[in-house]
Structure formats: C-alpha cells, structure tokens
Length: 267
Image (cartoon, rainbow, N blue to C red):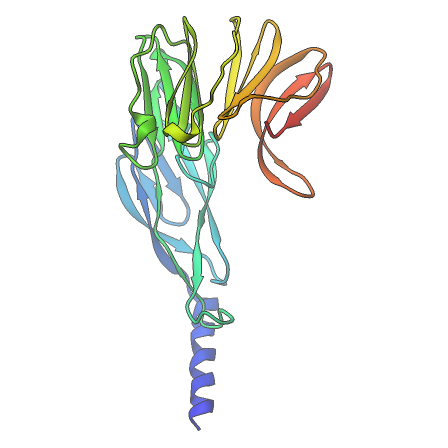
C-alpha cells in the first residue's frame, strides 16, 4: 500500500510539473536608460526583480528569450550573463536541479539568475567591449568605465589610462589601447603578458585572458604565457569574436575575414 501511495504521489507531482508553469526570480540590475522585456513576465526600465514564468515540461535547464531596447540616444552594450553576447536579444538560461536526485521524476528546482544589462549615451561612446562577465566602454571624455556581473571586482577598478581609444573585455580582464600601446587590468592571474609593439589604427578583441589585435603588420595574439600562435593570413580584416560549434568544442573564437574566407581560431 505504501509503495502504491508513493508512486501515486510522484505521478501527481510529475503531472503538475508538466502542466503548470513554474516561476523563478530574475534580478535585473539595469545600468543606464533602456528597457528589458520578455513575454515570460519581464518588463523593467529600472533595476527590478521580475518573476519569470518557465514553460513546461519543467525538465532540464530552461531558456527564456529576453530583449533589450535602448532609450532614444542610448546604445546597448551587453548583458553580463554567461548565456549572452552583445546582441539585444538573449536566451537567458535558468539552471535546474533535480528535486529527487534520481530521475527528475518530481521535476526540477530552478535558481534565481542575475543580469546587469548596460546602456550608455551614444553621443559620448568611442568604443566598447563585452564578455559574459563584464562590459566596458571608452568615452570621448577620455574615461573608460566597466560594469561587471559581480559589482566591485577587479575589472571595474579601471586604472588611470593615457588617451584610451579602444577597449576589449575577456572574462575578468579588460584591455585598452592607449598612447603607449595596450594596457590591461583585472584579475592578476589572468592578465596577458609580453605585449608586442602595435601600430595603430588597429582592431582589438579578447577571449578570457587572451588578446588579439589586427594592426598594420597583421594579427598579433598573446596571453598569460606570452605570444600565441595564429593561423597564416593573406589579407586579414574585421577581427571579431564569434560563437562557433565544432564536432569537439563550442564557444567563442577569434575570427577574421581573409581574402574572401572566414578564418577562426581558439587563440
């Protein structure tokens, strides 16, 4: 009898999980002027906590499409979330944990997520960079400002910079092009080392603790262990980081356009 009651209870919970939406908190730490919206229950034009409705069946991690809309005169820079790029649309992933620790037959418990979307005044913006953990902007005033997912970490502590013109962000490290070359700051153990001489104008991008620039001499990359190897190029242009899926790996890669061909590498 007890055995039957147990399985009837489990089956009832499973039906509830499959048929009813579950709500979970989304903490929106909005910076600047803009709105964050989702059909799942998000409508924020200032910092807020929204209750997001997750669609059944409530098994596995869930993704919720969320949009960022800048206010007039502002531009969107990024979300500060592991699921997102700098696109104005992000499928925010909510992580789930099996309630019964066995077959998830009783559904999943979902955890609160935090995003820190950043909007800045477009009239003062020179350049910007993003990662899943931080967003930085260089302004015409000569200042660089960074906003990380976890407020107060090393990336937000921008040092004095001499005429910053470009900025790039990789994980918990940021770099700026200044008059002396490339200046980086952030978590000490992840700072790129052994920067080569660069010759502006240039393009610059970062992945984690690795940085690549495209200047008048070509593509140059380095990281915590010094210079990094790159593919052979003919006429590289449009240096960027781009999400790629290969048979063995998935994630952001460095990419350039080279004589009509896209070439990408992990850095």
